[in-house]
Length: 96
Image 1: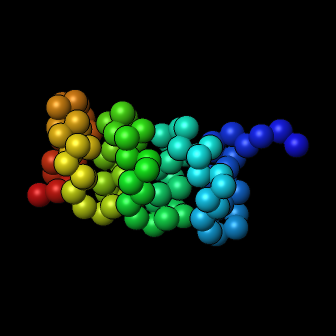
Image 2: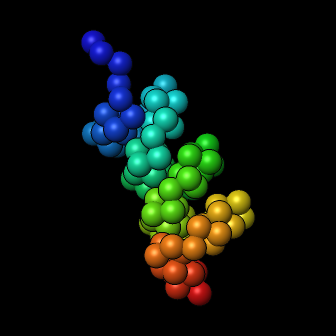
Image 3: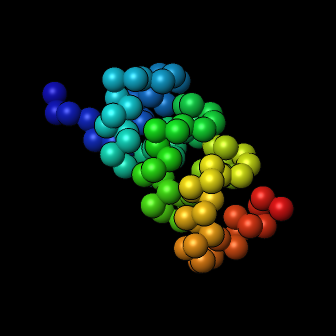
């Protein structure tokens, strides 16, 4: 069997409806998969994924809105504010 790709690992966890710690290292290689794993499997903050998610303004905004459901941790918050793009504006409106 071929090794899992990040999104396949997330889908396996989604299919089982639970965390799969042995696949989390694979999921962490991709920001998109990490966000969805945090949102749908962990159902909240996933600190290990935050450095990779923070590199994408869109995913950072989605992480705040749908996984954390509130303000981002300081380093992510500051990075998103400094990115100054359309998701920065959406994030600022969301956390008001």
